[in-house]
Amino acid sequence: MGSRPRLTVAAPRRPRIGVVLGAGGVLGAAWTAGALVTLQQRLDRRIGDADLVVGTSAGSVLATALRCGVDVDDIVEHQRGSAGVALTQLSELDRDSGGALPPLPRLWIGSPQLLLNAARSPLRAHPLVAASALMPQGRAQHPSLARLVDGLLARGAGSWPPAETWIMTVDYGSGRRVAFGRSGAPEATMQDAVVASCSIPGWYEPKTIGDRRYVDGGVRSMASLDLLSRADLDEVYVLAPMASYVADTPINPLACLERRIRRLITIGLTSEARKVRATGAEVTILTPGPEDLAAIGVNLMDPSRRQRVLETSLRTAPGTLDAVEKRRHAA
Image (cartoon, rainbow, N blue to C red; front, side):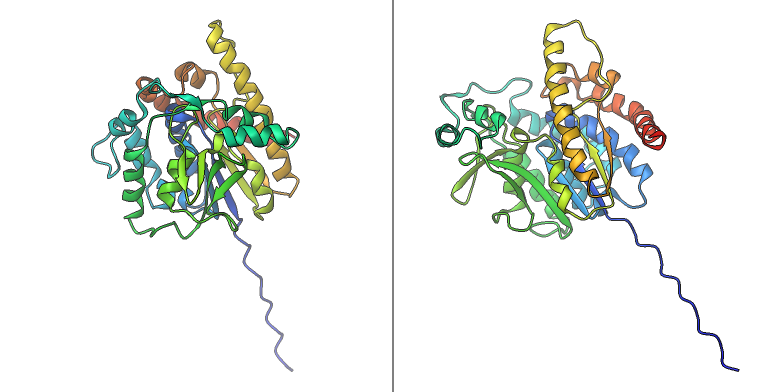
């Protein structure tokens, strides 16, 4: 009597995970650093080992650090100003930015070419991108940020991390969104891509790559989550410091204006998430809550609030993620 054939059971496929780190300036980076600690505790792998990492503006810096092997705890210590972390000191980055307010800009609009293109094809021009063309030409530069990225790459990542990493920018002539590192994107070094992604119109000079000028990807979208709808992912985790699903009700007129802008950003993020969920991917979005917003204030570029924002995020992020997961399971 012959022996029975052996049954083999295929091991479950490891889910493909994407991580999106949104724009948010100095304080957005601090909030994201705190939220990364909570996210790291929930994942089955290092965040830096995700199948796809997408970074915009401040999020591009954190994305690069994670992809170059920097642990989340080291990112937190860097935000605390620790001299023991082998990264460019925050004081140097703050000096380059000019502090809470930008250097006096040049007296000319940022991109006449973009403005002309928008006038020729107004229905094709994204309104926020077109408006950015009217910003005066920024003067600040990013030498310390460039050194930080070079130092990260020196840890062994080469000229670009081997795992798929997208750095979001906007072509300041055409208005087109460009994801450096994505298939089909123009060639760029990681240093140039991150500097471009952090070049806020009106504050920093646009970054020239090849024969094109690029600016902060947040001009077009604070997270560019919608681009992940074609990335074949099972789970997507989004940290979006400029959106808020549970906001506060401030009295200060500037804070009220900031919350209205934040609400519009949140609506846009929700629309982008809908496109990714339509592919069957599970999307988890973390945003600042009322305590975080009180810590952040109205100026995301104010380094004097960095520590308060970081420590608040470390305290609030676990409850925020619990609430998000509870709502999803109840749906």
